[in-house]
Length: 260
Image 1 (cartoon, rainbow, N blue to C red):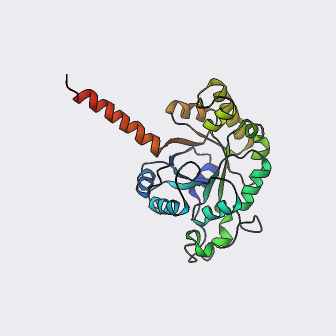
Image 2 (cartoon, rainbow, N blue to C red):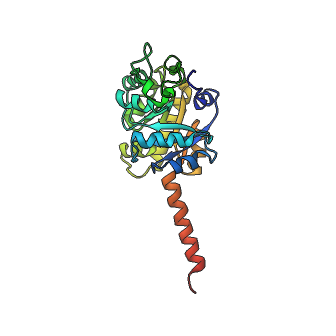
Image 3 (cartoon, one colour):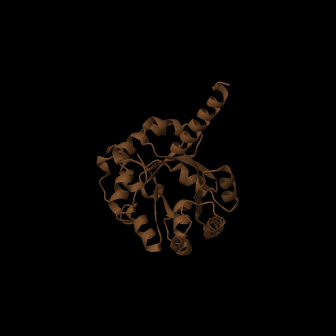
């Protein structure tokens, strides 16, 4: 059996806008719920959230059949980290803090089996190959890999033309929070100076022929970034969505039910 078609990659190649949500709780039930809520993708975060491989694989299993395609964000783009994530059965991986074409090339090679890369051939032990039941996995996996690199610093923004030129990089994803901090605006991703750089970067990525991506936690930002060229858009997170909902529920309930 061949590696399954990466529907997210195919949709992006077709020019479609794909929206998704970050998963930070590390809870399979939350992943299952989110994946059934109409998003195109759900990202299990291994950089800033308490997700180890055992937790990740449970969330990936919970998402099966729910509608959204799974993505894993690894903590770093090292070969062994990427190999372990791919062996979990995910086909789309996001790598943070990519600043050079050389980094991007190393990441692409780490995510592909020889002769196209250096990924270790041990998937017979892993979920990716159906625990060895998918005999054709190793020979068909490379074509279904989707590589997302994060642009999160001014140096990375300047290197967009070189990074975008790397064969095998599918999406260049702008991280507004880290970019803002690097530009001298920590906690102010909405600063006009940061916004201008983000929108210009999205346009440059689009002109390169690669997919522009960005995180936008407000509908206003999402619409503006889409107009600038973004087609892979993170529109929220489980943690922040729950926090907003609970605060709203608390405030409205207290206002309605408090004694006069």
